[in-house]
Length: 175
Image (tube, rainbow, N blue to C red; front, side, top):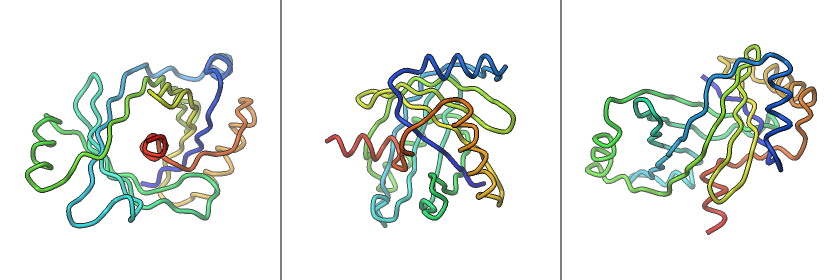
């Protein structure tokens, strides 16, 4: 699957939340996400533009691999593979035994909404601020998804320069 995403930094999430509710978006819940990122011993993910993370929420841990960003769409787009694991802690021990190193941790509080085939995330990220992400997962029609995302952003009054960096990259840039 390909994740096509618009991320914009906003001063407040209230306006976006109110717009979503007025459009009868489905509220999917609010949760704390604690993400731990790893780097591989055989290649530097910072150089290859990949990511490997273990995400902790209220439910089972989620392992995510993100491939290199696709630059020609104007928004952030990359392959994303996810799978749940019974124990994130055991998986982290496996990574440690294999020589993977912790890179950073990202803590965020996220509200999730669905409007049609688009997902909206309203994020408050430690040390970074508040952001809105609009995401569509596609098999192949990335350009159609990009147009739809930009149209939704305009309809919702979300403006600003698209942020192509991940929260991990933004956090590492502050160090």
